[in-house]
Image (tube, rainbow, N blue to C red; front, side, top):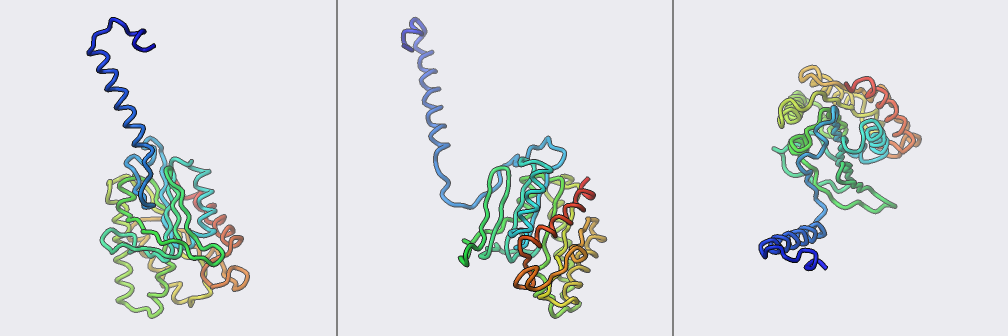
Length: 270
């Protein structure tokens, strides 16, 4: 039928048609090739660059868990699936997200919610989740061009600061400065707002250690011009009611914490 329809056309015409069909078939075959591993690198133009607000959130195990579930629901509803990316790595601290530091592989949980991927590794019935590589902050910012960055980190510093010293304070202050500089590095001017959600109340750590982390973040906020949401004023950890280990909140308590945080985000995000 095709040859009949195009009878009388030059041979060169049929050659072009044939080449086009071959190219199309090869392209279609490539799209069906499966990815060999589960590591994901965000593609260029990850967010719709025309959107006035594009949100990147980074967190630790609290964002892997119930708090992260609630935050993900809130951000997707408010800004839309195409303009939100959330990454959370259990056990991580700010320095482990920096490109200058060694690769950090989490073995206790990982969350990745983007316009192109949905991943959640968490413990199920006592079974440990698979390991996952923590992405680097500079790479995420360079590829996603977010306008707002939300951070929920700092809890895992409390073990480091149990023996608080001046040297520890200087070290962690420098890490915070480098973290904020990394957000603003690539591309310059893309990020218009940074909001840091400080660690919630914990019964596992002393009030002095918790306050030391809060003070580090608050002082950095003044120094590096970013907003904070003070979770220590929004939460109170009651062992047996809030959770079982003094650090992680059960689903109900995590949802209550997230509800209070999102109320402040409604006011803060410009």
